[in-house]
Image (cartoon, rainbow, N blue to C red; front, side, top):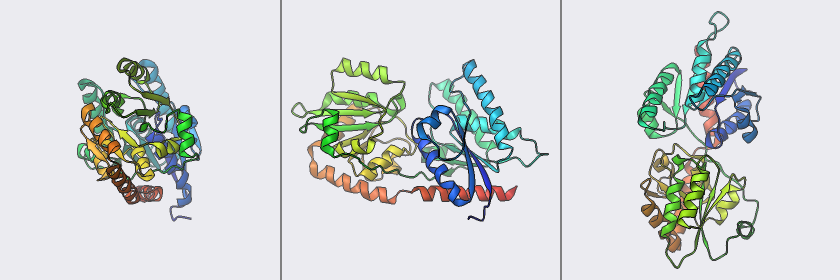
Length: 367
């Protein structure tokens, strides 16, 4: 048992279909072994996707500025307020969860017990048009000032948010369940075709439209199939672009066999317009696959020398880098070996939880 005793922590997140949800699920699963009693609060759909191992309470945090979303967010703050009355620490993941947590925490009556400490982790940059992004950036600064500790996942976020600390994020590893030949057969891809794999939510941030355009530039004597695993709001636009360009790009939807897909990938592409510290990149490194990634956000620091870096939003550079790896087996093998070496240097979940428990204990001792 940890000397922390019955330290009570509320982990809050908004809608997530990828890295943030996986990160919170991994952390929540391990906290109890450190003497921390945790509860996760977030949308019901997020729990259905990740199956949080700790007690879960549903709060529906709206995702837009429309009236129904604002009403849902107000109700979420009220529900969260009831929970944080008995919490020692509230740890919010992402801007929307952090904003709701600031409101809920500030309304706790000091006569009943001290306000819980507020920890915020920012996982993403602000997106959208200039006006929207400017408003959100100002709001993020306000939220950050209200927090007792702010973690960020990438160097550019650290530069943008004063007094923030770098968060440790574990590199996940998956176990393949099938033989590669079986996976190829299920994908209906011939043995003589090269496979370029991309994984992520179908959202403009991920740059999959850049990868689709890059697929027009493969050597004429080489068959290359692009497999994109994931779903999201850009699916319709990407499907239309694939049809217009007449390229062999397959939108596979959400998959639970990423480890199997990685085993048959000749190259993994990550053409994002921005990334923080993406779990997918860590998974690619752990699997020892050659990777081409856009030089944005935290990606250069994450991959080190274990991936080919290209400018974002540049289909020509992306296609050229992928083609080079496909045509040079020795070079691809070198990057595969670098990937395994780099993966061994990345944090594991025990490192992440240790950082957080130390932070929670320090803040709780102040109250």
